[in-house]
Length: 253
Image 1: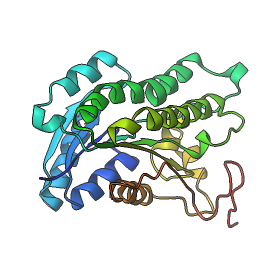
Image 2 (image 1 turned 90 degrees about the vertical axis):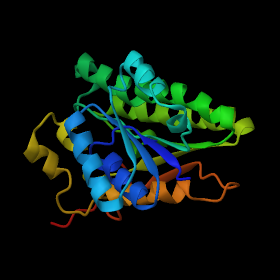
Image 3 (image 1 turned 30 degrees about the vertical axis):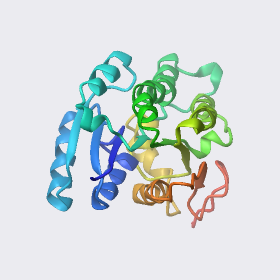
C-alpha cells in the first residue's frame, strides 16, 4: 500500500512543492488549506502528472473546531497517516515590538504555533495507536536566531523548535519520528504576505542573490521521510549559498 502524507498549507510554496514531489514518489496525499479553488487545481495537476490519489480538506488551521471536525471526518483508511508535514505558516509585518500590530501578532501566533498544535493533537493519537509515523514541522532560520523588526515571527519559530524537541522525546516510546526543517530565504509568497501585498518590496528581498526554491526544501523533506526506520534526522537548517545568517547576505550589485 502507498504511504499517506498529510500536508498543511498545501496550496502554495513549500506545501505545493512537497505535494508534487511526494506524489511523484508514490505517496497518497491529504492536502489541506484555506483556498479551496487552489486545492482543487492542485489535485488536478497531481492526478494528471502522477496519477496521484488525493483527498482535499479545506479548513483554517487557526480554528480548532474546523481542524478537529475536518480531520475526524476522514475514514479509517485515511487516518492511517504515515507522514504529517506541518507546513502552514506566515510572517506578517516588519515592526518593532512597541510599534507592532496586535492583529499581526495574533495571525502569526495562531497560525505558526497554535495551528501546528491543533493539527498535531488530532493526528498524533492515530500514529500512537499504530506505533508508527513521522512528523515534520517546518520551522525557519528565524527559529535559530532573532532579528530586529521580526521579534514575534522569530518567537513563533523558536516555539516550533522547542515544541518539536519536546514531541521528539514524548513520542520515543511509540517509534514516531519528529524532525524540523528550518529554511533561510525561500522565494515563495512569504514576503508578499509579510509586506501585505507590496509587490516591489517583496521582490527586493531577493535582489542580487539566488534564494532557495520551494522545490529545494521539498527535496530536503523527502530525504528526511525516506530514511531507514532506525534513522531520525532531528533538525535541518538549509540556506541559500549567498546567506550566512538572518542578516548576512551577499548580493551581487
